[in-house]
Image (cartoon, rainbow, N blue to C red):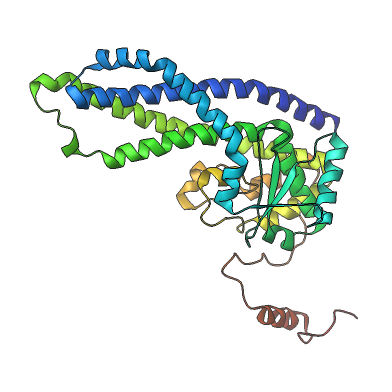
Length: 351
């Protein structure tokens, strides 16, 4: 257990270092993306070449830097409210759910942490996420389905997982990645959808320099777009394993984390929630081909890691609950259970 705690503390320190490199890398990505935009603009407007566009980019460099810093600052300031509006989350007070608050307070007291705020999403999905950039903002959001389907030990494990994301600095990293990568992806999509062959003419001999600038600009924007996606993915799998381990360190109950993961599997998808927010969730159900670029390890791999490294045990569980939208009416389910046990559907389970 000491070695595990030491590993978590080392991860926190490494995350601070990685944060600096990530922010620097994302600013470089903003510069690269801006250069691509200027190349297209100069090439399309007056046939200007690469040299002209690069000179213009150097003149715009201070403004691009200011824009990038302002965008990150705004993201830090509004992230909780923005995520809340996208997910429909609402804040809850201690009087609204004393039991949930008691779980969170006990976990925080054990590590000398400030208690984050709590919020809830009225959804049947089973999920949770942490948001915020500082102690005044940190919020843990859970879904109604999670509270209804998980027992206290499993719910505590999920809360501990999200607290570990806050302790490790993962939440700040994801905000930076989502804010900058999101705007790059949005502008890139607008450009590639909005521009057509008829809107840019580069066929005449006197516009060869402009045509080359435009082609290079499109290539740079496409590269920036790809790197923006890869940055988001690079912050995913390892942080989930570490958060699972951190939850076990806090609760001393690996079996509860395993049980929670098995119950949540296949039932975590929040409808109409952007992918950037789902990246921050406890679980992000992969979809077919997207599994190759999943932001989360599979449930099976996370459970296996807990069994091998934390001494967890896979429980003997009833058949997996059906996914949302595929559930049978309650009487039918009870009748089937009674048929398997040989009793009537409303008889007690006594001897």
